[in-house]
Length: 235
Image 1 (cartoon, one colour):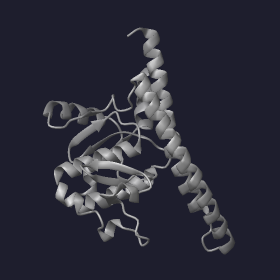
Image 2 (image 1 turned 120 degrees about the vertical axis):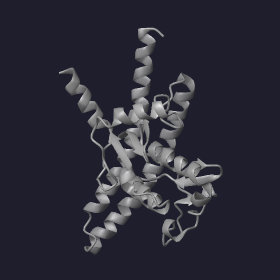
Image 3 (image 1 turned 90 degrees about the vertical axis):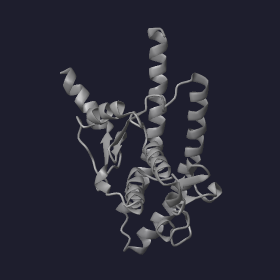
């Protein structure tokens, strides 16, 4: 690959990552605005609900276009957001290397605020994964790991009261049409992925608890920490 084609590939990848960042930041902004509303003020609450309805509709429409645009660009250019991912899997030596690399950075746990922050890796139960670009992808990989660990238990989350809202909305289902944004995490099993970074954080806590796994066995590593480390190495 020539230096020019490498530069073009890098630009394309950066644009794709920026597109994903905008999608996730729109969800974070929605959370921010909703939390800033005085819910004890009826007028403010009514105005907030009206805003949220309009905002959610526009954000959902943008998400559809962004997803289609990203898929189109990746297909045409053969640039994949997942091509930089690495996971220890069953290879002990590879896993030890990935975990050692991640442990050079600051670890974060599932009791922190991840608004406007982006992940690039995680360690779950001693297995490391790096090179991810979005919270949605992180959520997908964790769910897939747990599905492979115990598919029957994961399927048991479908319709479970702890994963069903008072309005009957499901976090996991075998019927993707019931979800706002369905993400397949196992054979015929789908997760709701229309979640902000903190929404994914909260869902991960609940899923790990359902699998009787201590949440401190999950560590996430943020892009801002990695990039800050690189700048420090260059100075």
